[in-house]
Length: 101
Image (cartoon, rainbow, N blue to C red):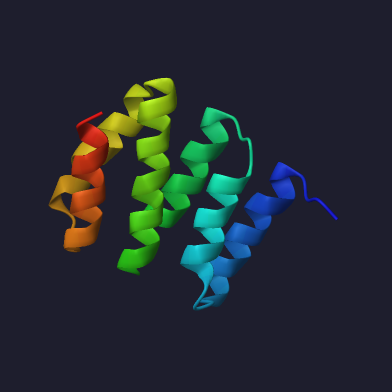
């Protein structure tokens, strides 16, 4: 069964709320495996970036990188710039990688 975007988004929110240890992987796979509109990807990235887990934030940064590279999304570039101050060096590295695009 294939879920619609609203169902995927609700699943992402549920994963975040339950604290599932696999939420980062789930969010990243949703973002990479679906053909989503830019605004949907941006929302998914924001969910990931709001997470306390650095691995999840890296996934959010990678979604932003995709938006910058594939669509030149200015809003995603601004969010990547803000991530340069993240406490997790992996998030900073992902942000810098995207800003070089």
